[in-house]
Image (cartoon, rainbow, N blue to C red; front, top):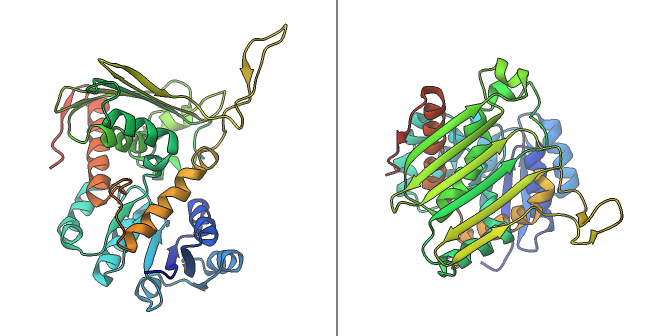
Length: 338
């Protein structure tokens, strides 16, 4: 396929705007249909980035001039829209998670496994160039067999109060990205131990959620992964990765606008603030995620940069559920991702 891939976008909220802009900028993609149940949102997005507007997601998915679909609508709609894409034989990129309820995910698992059209999950951090390079060097054996992976993920501030009760909790909403990152290094996780903490946000505690967490995963080969999460960080969006093995250590630090540092009489080696928002920190990752999906839709060889699929989305939810159980019950949870 040499012509641009024709996209339908479902959902025009914050993340939908990111996908719309990326499709618009890509020479290999074109926005054909924009859908939102609030038609005015679809109309505004179509006016800005192209395509025609509709409030009917099934019409968007089944349109004759659509080659692929991006699902960026609210989480409760994801599983039904993915199912509709499977029924229509249309490739779909779905934002995480597939659903907050594993039973609903498993209800369409066999259809996803049997499908000839791809289902891709929006774990964009796999495409972050810094994390991807670290993963490549680990896979190449630069530090020997991976023994330990440390993932630090702190948001600058908590989510809006009205979002918390709908989010699925810190493990399914926030840590799920880190759980997928962990599996991109150690696919077969067999045990989870998580501690949920209430350190600073009374609003989140009032909803029975946690504002921080520390999670330890164990891989089938004895690898250990420690994930540190917090819903606040005074110094900006804190995203770091460290891989350790018998041959040494590889690490990715936080990203700043430039690498310029300053030393004066009042402070030494100071730099610019870290990125304040995930859309800034992972801007390039979202662009590369779309490029990989386009290549998948076209049937090109993507073995060098494979997109996370339905099973990866399911596995991340299984791990998130195990984290929740471990934190609530104070015990290690055995995991079977098969």
